[in-house]
Amino acid sequence: MDKSKRDLVIAIGLVGTFLVLAGRGFLPKNGASAPGSSAAVAVPSDLSFLVAARRNQKAIGAQESIWAREWGRDPFLPQGAEVSTSGNANLTLSGIVWDDRTPLAMVNEKVLKVGDVIEGYRIIEIRPSSIVLWSPAGKTVELELFQSL
Image 1 (tube, rainbow, N blue to C red):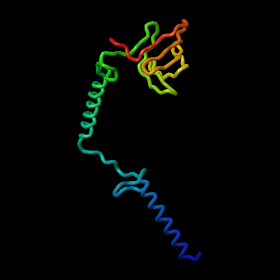
Image 2: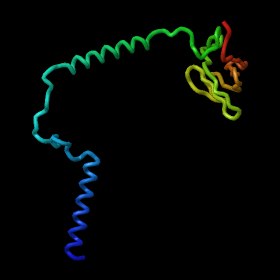
Image 3: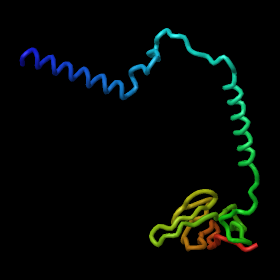
């Protein structure tokens, strides 16, 4: 390769490297100093940024107090219904995802399928609006999704 072709390849390589570095933000922006340089850090003369930060903190606190409020009736339950609980166990059925092949039930905030055991009760059937459990005493217990008030 002659000298002019080699110089052209080197120049193209350097320009390409420069473009890649500039595109990835490795080179300093206009008037900015490179990382690690001894340039002074600009500090605003007023403290308005502290006032804005304090105002944002108050807004966050106000939003958290709104989130902590009691909402009343669960909007996902039909009017006049409550979440079903079993009388002789601490089991709460709060949801069913119905599918012919793989139905799932949410009991005590755990997602379960047929055959799973929770607090000694084995799920033997999941229906569209109820589940059937086998109790440790050898009896079947049915939990309905919604219980009328």
